[in-house]
Length: 85
Image 1 (spheres, one colour):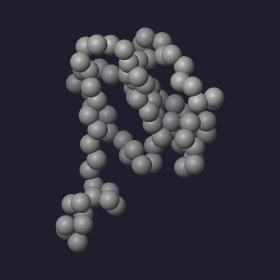
Image 2 (image 1 turned 120 degrees about the vertical axis):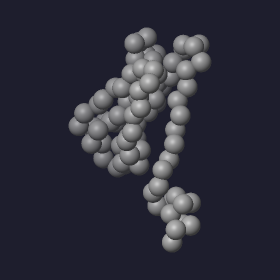
Image 3 (image 1 turned 90 degrees about the vertical axis):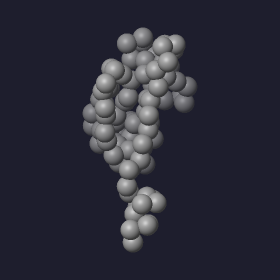
């Protein structure tokens, strides 16, 4: 791409896009074996390893107060792992 985000169709707004199998140096998803779009539905929980799966959340224009929560658990940089060592 040219680095300019195209306007998304209304049904794609706010979707989580997972670029499955993209190589580690890819930051656009061009090398992904598969692209999964997970649409925002109330009560849905999505868990994945954000360190190994290239991903993005598409912007949305819906003024309904919707938000995304991001939480990191564990991993090499975890404060809790350092405390246990």
